[in-house]
Amino acid sequence: MDLLREVREQALDPNYQARHDQDPGAISRRPIGVAAVVLLLVTGVLIGIAWRSTVARAPLDARERKNLVAHVQSAQAHESAQHAELDRLRASVNAMKGVTASPIDEEVGLDSATTAMVGPGIRIIVDDANAAPADELGDKDMRRLVNALWQAGAEAVAINGHRVGPRTAIRSAGSAITVDYVSLSRPYVVEAIGSPQKLPAELADTPGGRWMTYLRDNSSITYQVTTKDRVSVPESKASVSHASPHR
Image (cartoon, rainbow, N blue to C red; front, side):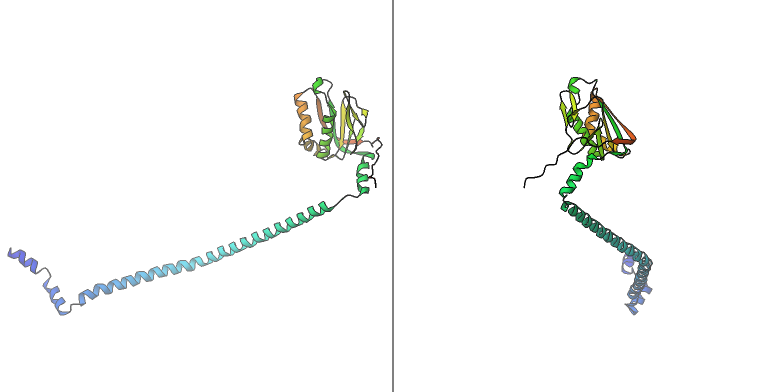
């Protein structure tokens, strides 16, 4: 028990106690000074690392900023060009809307069928000789085909040697199809002047072209399109009278 009491009462080393009694603040100041030095060193190291990282990244940031500015300027220039093109197209459309054909120009367009033409194009053979009466071709079918040729870009059209113009009448007379009241005989040969490379595909993509393809695939009607290096379309033999408004 005496030993335990002595250990409890004299827990500190006598020399440490004596040093503490001589200068009570000496021992407590040393750990604080060392900690401060260590803290300052660590702070300095961190500041140095941050500074070096900032310096090393500065050229990269400048390059990225330059690229971003160039990209923005390019986008702005492209947008300006698009606006200019849009304005140009609008002006062109407005100009075309404002153009009106004179009576002389209309007469020239109506009389264009009176001139014979020769050039490359296509030849279409249509025949309903083997078709059932309900599937026979009528004037509506022929008009669909002719309108489809105009839509496809044909420059001139003739049916069995009869020129088709803006005022050409395509009608039915009994079971026969007539062009300007002239009866046609089977097979019907339709010739059109135009681009042999484009005209067949453009024709097939029109409503009239799709209708003729449907008739060929779903009935006994013959519908055959071939390209030709030379197609001759005669002048119109029909006399066309021009009506003028009463003044």
